[in-house]
Image (cartoon, rainbow, N blue to C red; front, side):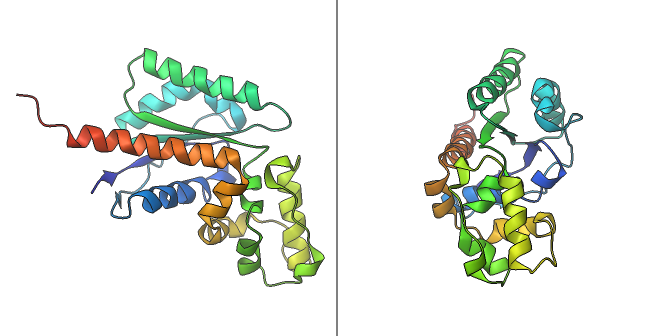
Length: 212
């Protein structure tokens, strides 16, 4: 059994009801007995993908806050998958170069975080009890404007009473089926694998016999 404190480096406020919850669910799916301490309340100074450039400094702050694992997720926006991947890998390398031992589980949201919330239509139907025939779901990671599309679906399902998914982000992330999300969003699956790999590293360190 592992006791775990997580820290998050994300693009903006609307990411924080989603990514932390999905991260915990991925870990619980792998190791159900994990005990989660309250997440670090620290946030990057810069918003948008600009936070990646200051990741080494922020990672040091999270390390001082006794975080066991850092989770960093960045949107790829239009067609900048390779660019954003390279950016975050360079930041992770700088963290390693300056001796930050805390494992960083990174992820790319293609083209944005909202795509992951589009992946499972049953999650949206569970939260918004509207006319299912009125909406269509595109392949999540091929949708160029997932935030616009998600909000449009919310508006259609609520008859215009709700205009944004944001107040329901936590509830959506609770209802989404992880296996469906991993099957339909390759980049989320990669992110989940990175989270589990970091968790395994922590398990390995914890189970090492004491020196001497």
